[in-house]
Length: 138
Image (cartoon, rainbow, N blue to C red; front, side, top):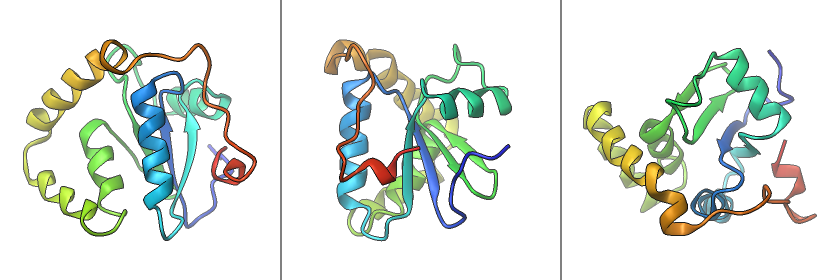
């Protein structure tokens, strides 16, 4: 179970055809001042391998995943809030919402995820990183 992830990095897996998800990735890249994150689409070879290795049922978890080199995988609102917690002030204040039970946070997350294509649109193909950003993607 190796995904070519450097030890000090975390891997964000996202829906590569979702406009909201792609915008979120661009936001994280812009605010990741300590270069903590790398990215891959859920549809990529690495994304599909992680889904298989962690036995993720994609019909139930259609969301952002956060994988760390310690082989820990989080998803949905927990992943989003853990990512925000590492993006510096004021975004890191979002981590206060981790005190809310996950089933409540995930209800809100799932509602947005369910409607994301309708509200934000969908691409025909996964995002292709620019040459400057290529080293941030697996």
